[in-house]
Length: 210
Ligand code: OGA
Ligand code: MN
Image (cartoon, rainbow, N blue to C red):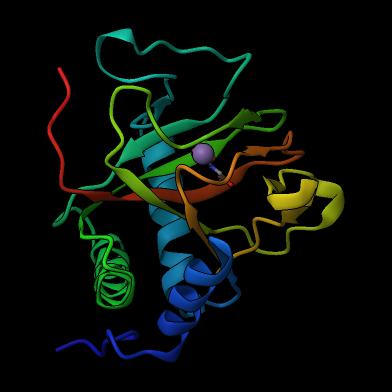
């Protein structure tokens, strides 16, 4: 059996939970080991090379449309059983889901996530990760896969926090950012080079909108 890198008792998980409770967001460097981060980046590049990534849409359901003036990333959703690296990522995020539920009682039921690739020049305008007609997305989690990312490469995640404070995050390999989906507006600044990530949402129980 493969060694687990993270268990529901891992101290980094309580750090995320404490940050969420006190200020609504958290940032952790080196959330997962470098070999797993490299394997996830390779899996994302492989899917891209095989044409499996598609331009991301804006909105949900029938009203979804591709609008490159709002977001220019290409995505593919992840399902269990597709690749060992993805399964290990989903296991780690399930540990985080349990840790959040134990302390914050959000009743998070599942986690949905996709690979995202921003080609050079792509960005994602300011938005909230919550659909008008579907408020099940409660906690957002973005995990970055880019080695040697420099500030001049752009592509920062900019979060708009309370009291007009802005906080920028470099999309550096191994970094995890977690925030309350309905509370933190954010944007992705234009990336100067290809930018890879895994973006996902912990969802509460709720009724499927129609
Ligand atoms: C998103 C998003 C942020 C990032 O996909 O909704 O805001 O840093 N991504 O990739
Ligand atoms: Mn977002």
